[in-house]
Length: 263
Image (cartoon, rainbow, N blue to C red; front, side, top):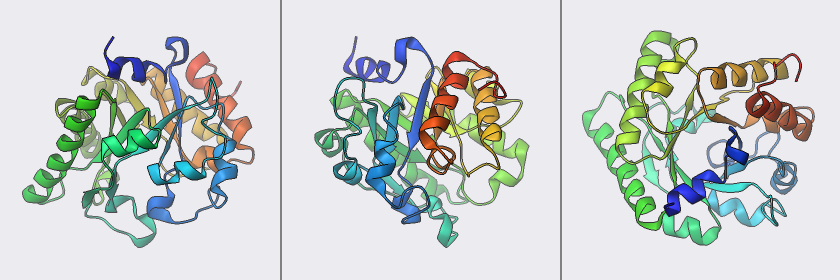
């Protein structure tokens, strides 16, 4: 096995689907509900298969990553203005925030970088590709799996067909640029087309906090039923009434294929 394959396999317990919790929101949201006390939030996620965070916050993760059976650590490498939702940024300007080497030195098992295209500027798109491809080259050299995060710019999500087409095409582009897995939006009934379009694992993200736990579990169920190899949920876990309990319910749906209502 290659170094990438060894590290990537660790997020799939026994070959099952993966449940990843994202807690990197503070990079673009500041202190938000569920993440004000970062250490307490981190230590509630011991049962996750992997946790995504800003690498500079690893020092505040308490005992989350200590010992056998702890979650794998995924470090976000680039900073993207489109995630600055409180400030309503729309243009998706991306900068490299940390090298793969520095993230590995900080403890990362895997790394993640976002890619946004169709920004209405070919020059802007090319710059975003340049940053992503550079990080893919670094990760390949070090044998570290790179998760490509596919996000839209502007108001693309308002048009479901156009949004699905963008996600399907951009996921393939990220794969061809060197991604080893994909984190992206569940696009609805045609999501299987997204999965079929890439020869690498696809993880569905939870996006905004949904109205109920059942809604979040239903999204996860639909995604894995369409072929997703897992989910990356943030607010739906961190802002649950009981994050640890909801995480267990989510694992029942994603890994044991339990019906959401039963979970």
